[in-house]
Length: 350
Ligand SMILES: *Cc1c(COP(=O)(O)O)cnc(C)c1O
Image (tube, rainbow, N blue to C red):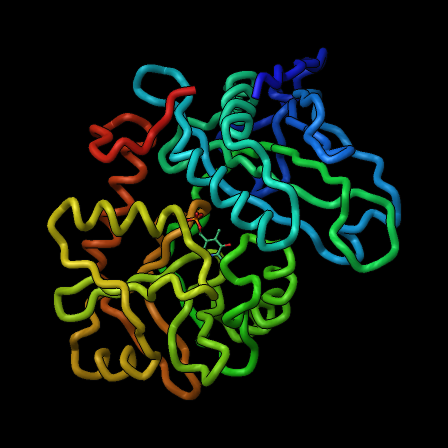
């Protein structure tokens, strides 16, 4: 695609309003955004322009029928001083996987990566440099055709916005194993990064928080036994010297951090097995002293150590030692800023 991206830069940068020592969570956005519309069966000329509000028709189909998907990734500054992206092609592929599942057009993968690079390069002064911080990138696509009626929309927007972010969890987290609500069922949209999946998760998550937990641990939709994943993270356990994580069974989001964690651990010689794990097994192994670690993986947090899982009237406590989880977190954070060698070739220069 020879889609040259038009660039329209702001005359008034808001960068001087940002206090890098005190970045508010999710409310600060860089000066620019990338935007491209799908009209008449194809993606139109794209541009990078000053970040601003969009005027959208009240009948825009995303509002009514929920055709909306997103991605999440991070840019950091490498040792060399230039920005780096973490495996951006994987996000491009996953966006298109989600698009297909929701009956939306695919966005050209090359243009996706090119747009990210250009936006990050233009707004690179917004990339925080303190440990564990990054510029969070949010590519997303939604139906903006004005139409009342149930069918695939014919008009869409693909946009990328960017938000500087400090590390989210530096404490160990507590999960609530949900036995009433589900996140995803086989055949549903659980393996797509669809906005609607989150809509369905909000009420159960708020309820879990009101009970003092940080996130929901989702169990399978058939009988609430098999562990699926956590709010916005995939989950790993270390049981009797083996690292286990649930398999991508069609109801779990294929996390890029999950994939990277598996690759890294295997590269380091750990035994990693993707297999079904029931909540009862976690309860039993914890009682037998074989549950050695539990951690979640996702772009936003990197790796979050799990300290406890609440399940029915049980409270499953996990050892407060997380050598494997910590090694994965440190490795990802160091590779991102070029502090250690990128042995698995994750980083892409902007
Ligand atoms: C995004 C997401 C993850 C983590 O995926 P990463 O690519 O590692 O950021 C895990 N679970 C859900 C439900 C998600 O939406």
